[in-house]
Figure 1 (spheres, helix red, strand yellow):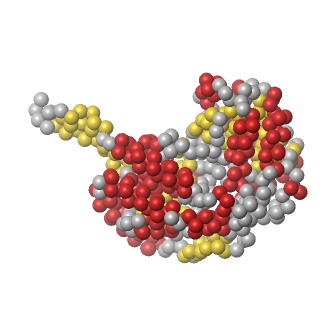
Figure 2 (figure 1 turned 180 degrees about the horizontal axis):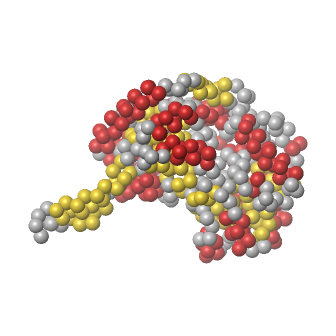
Figure 3 (figure 1 turned 135 degrees about the vertical axis):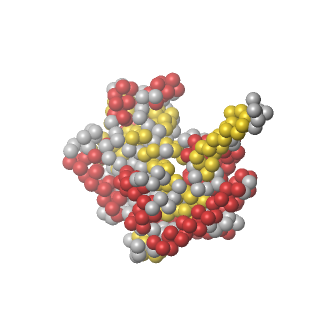
Amino acid sequence: MSGVLKCISPVDGSVFAEREVMDSKSAAELVAKVRAAQPAWAKRPLAERIELVKAGIKRLNEMTDEVVPELAKMMGRPVRYGGEFGGVNERTDYMASIAEKALAPLVIEDSDTFTRKIEHVPHGVVFVIAPWNYPYLTAINTIVPALIAGNTVIIKHATQTLLVGERIATAFKEAGLPEEVFSNIFLDHAGTEVLISAGAFDFINFTGSVGGGKAIEKAAAGTFTGLGLELGGKDPGYVMDDCDLDWAVDVLMDGALYNAGQCCCGIERIYVARPLYAEFIEKAKAWAEKLKLGSPLDPETTIGPMANVRFAREVREQTKEAIADGAKALIDPSLFPEDDGGAYLMPQILVDVTHDMRVMRDESFGPVVGIMPVDSDEEAVELMNDCQYGLTASLWTNDPERAQSIGEQIETGTVFMNRADYLDPALCWTGCKDTGRGGSLSEIGFHNLTRPKSYHMRKKQA
């Protein structure tokens, strides 16, 4: 295991950052140090762990001026949107606020004769493999509750956002967290699989592709290591005939095109009740045409490059195939002259699409969305479920009972009504089908980052 990890900036194709891959011996030694630090960390009072974790996040916030342009250069998000710390703070504060309740023992009996209870015990060493699209937010989903629960944590970040794990580790260290309690590691895929297959970790959380999830499951086979996997998505929106149309257009198009479409729960396909279809299409087209494609370092830019040329290539191929098969592209390329055939990719809306097209079936993870008319709730449900993924579904109606009924029929992890592309820390973030397994945040997130330990204590003869 040797070599150099290189972050190629989508802004100009240059090498923005590089770090040496840690060799096998050093990686094993790091894991051993982190494991040795875990018992003492877990013995600290919960309030003290919470205080130190929140101090680390506060220190991270103080790095905003450096982090925002750094993110733009690493993965292309425009600087006008700032960092991810609004969401980071919301999730941190909520998980800290529920920790005492979520981690409290479940007491079945506490009498003169017996104490019977179930405690939530930390797994030990938690390994976080984080993605590039929301590199701080997705990592924090696991890091914060894992540390609060008494685990020690090692993070390996995506090469595209190479410096993020390093920054988080620096923030925690400067805030007073013991260095071995949270560590950053630079590994390639082979080195990662070696550690996983050796049973180096007690729990692994991975956010990324289906292929990556399969590789992790294969590496972990036989080690009985707990896994949390958030993988692909193809999230639908359904616009019903009784909705607020302008609101639906604004939120769904933002959900489809924000961050150049590189959102875990971004909207990738939209189904519209036929009476509203023509008007929805007209308004959606006007919405997309107002975007400005360009350098993410320009404060006027609203859509920057995709994180990598190969990601943009996949979206172009899906779009080209769909058009060849009869789809119609609504957005005129002349409105976005910066689309250079590389990482800079213009937004696109496709109509006359079908589920025979990859753009309506496979994950795109880019600034393209297909829109279809439907004639009934039943047809919409059938189309929304005609997918290998299940992360979120966005329903647009003024009838909560109708939304509830439809939501019960959709194979998904989260049902939204009149909103999209949002992660509520009070609710379990989870998916079904090829989207993965497990769940983060909420009380359930704490339970997944701990294991139950039962106590049956007989104090005296009955």
